[in-house]
Length: 239
Image (tube, rainbow, N blue to C red; front, top):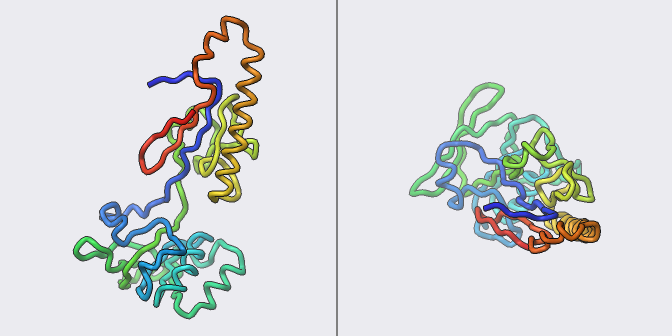
């Protein structure tokens, strides 16, 4: 339905970018993973493959190397986009096998669970297969802003342009968390955004109330702040 309000806080986040391979959705949670927990020892003593070449992929490889017997790090390029200290940490670990210039061409499975990857060497065109018990995809994220792009300014990747005040190009609309342009996307920075946006939205609402004449005050029944957030595919309007 339609909602009227004086301020809107956007907090729909960003979704992991997928490989786009056949069977990927069916194998999600059955060997195909997009997140990793340091407390998760499901893959202890097993073989895992991490796909990506940025900081997130290298972090995943390091975490998994502490519990797995072997970790493949599959990267389509020839160099990593991460801090030198993290790169060196990856390269010094004997159970991490780095596959440069390598593209994932297929997912292998048996009885509905991942068993390996089909790979293609981008330089030679040679194809091959590796066996693994789990795959961790870390090739970036896609902001959940498709419905907003005709109204709000976004960068080339679709992230809403907003600074540390969380203000956007539309007065009264605030962008928080992973959907806005920012150098660091973590839970703590998203929580900080939420606090800043709530304060700014409340201040704007109070100002509009102060400036409103009697006829405008008739809209006071509308919620002062509406936050729209997405969690596991469900929408939660909060006021």
